[in-house]
Image 1 (tube, one colour):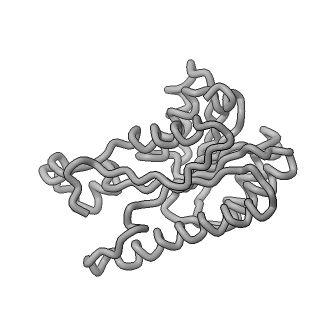
Image 2: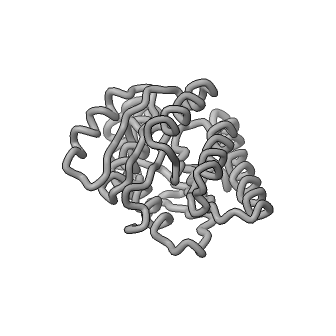
Amino acid sequence: MERWSGRVALVTGASAGIGAAIVRELVKNGLIVVGLARRAELVEELSVELKGAPGKLHAFKGDASKEEDILAAFDWVKKNLGRIDVLVNNAGVLYTTSLTEAFKLMKEKGVDDGHIIHINSVHANNLTDVNDLTQYDASKQAVTVLTEGLRWELVQLGSKIRVTSIKPGCVETNTLRIALHHDEEVFANIAALKGKDIADAVIYTLSTPPHVQVHEITIKPVGEKF
């Protein structure tokens, strides 16, 4: 991870759960991280926790589902940090704006070894038989299509920017707790990953040599049936 020290990463959905875990590990590995979140105050609290770490965390208040907020975040990064080297799309939604803006800024600043990482889901691989999850399955499969399309376009352009999709199974987050209707007994006994497990996958992906393209990683907790 030495080559990423002092370089700039933008992480969406950075206030809690998987996003906060990813931010924490990136800063610990020396990156300058901009955490985009609607609850920016939680990112600010995390920056205090990480004050002694090798990297640095900046909080940026914004909603990843709003194009104007995405554009504002990239504009802030350009004006204040000058470049972007890593984009981690962790928010529940993925707009092509974040992809095009990341690539534009990387290209403008001569970053040809950047990395774009999507936190997707195992639902991108399977169609569940739960009616309420059909749209969710479709949205995650769309992320896979966008990921592969972006990678193909970068190859055609001769770019060395890498694109990776990380597909976790069940993860212990507040979102899961809400989905389980705050049934703490079920929550405590369900097979689930920790946010750090996903963050570790991000670090692994970034730490591979520049000539290695990790297309996707699927991670499930032991005992998960889906």
